[in-house]
Amino acid sequence: MSDVRHSYIHGYSDPEQRRLLAQAEHWKSIVTLVDFHLEGGQKLLEVGCAVGATLALFAEAVPGMFLAGIDREPRQIEAARRNLRFVSDDRLDLRVGHGESLPWETATFDRVFIMWLLEHVRDPAPILSEAYRVLRPGGSISVVETDYDTYLALPETPASRVVLEAFREYFVRTGQHQAGRRMGAWLRGAGFRVTEHRAFPIHWSTAVDPVALRRHLDYTLDYIEPAFPALVGLGYPLETLRDGAAFLRGLWNCADGDFSQIVFRATGQKPG
Image (tube, rainbow, N blue to C red; front, side, top):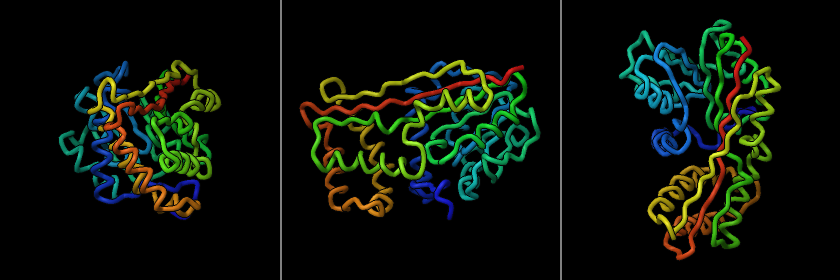
């Protein structure tokens, strides 16, 4: 990907594809399926579907849906076909392509879903404009994103602060570090009537559940650590990043270990 607007910091390795499957499970009961109502017979498109992990959750939750997905990386679509092989061919449409130029007719879908994509692009407007086009009148879009300003780990060291600062800085320079909080305005700008812009506070502490804290921090570091080469390219010392990551991974074992962040979901309806 030569265009920095479309840089994808996590890459497409086999371990990363397995991480995406685990990620979908991690967020399923915390955000993704919370008060998220799907109906059999609906046609849903996921833009930036990657390996099809979230589409698989939807297929399991509502077997009667028609599911479509698009990703610009052929390896992701190949993996999505494997992960969704339990869905019949007449209920599945997976394509290689770009969110800014969707290969479906106008008013094709009842729902559009986007998760962890808009944070990676400099200008979300073309993607949201295309989502608006392929939705039928009265159809809806839901977008899930985090906000890197909200990451907080306690206790902290100078090195652990650098890890979270560096990862945030990458999105400041190449994407949308405040995507979660900005989604409502983006949807409104694309012509949607915003029906939801909801915050999901994520908080784990040693005092309440050290196992859950460890699980969430392992999940978090599993997507930050592979990005270290890109962060070094921004000028952050590799040894400092490694020391900070090691400290964060051990936070669950501190008497006052604590980690929080906020994830947001915004939903908009196309006038009908």
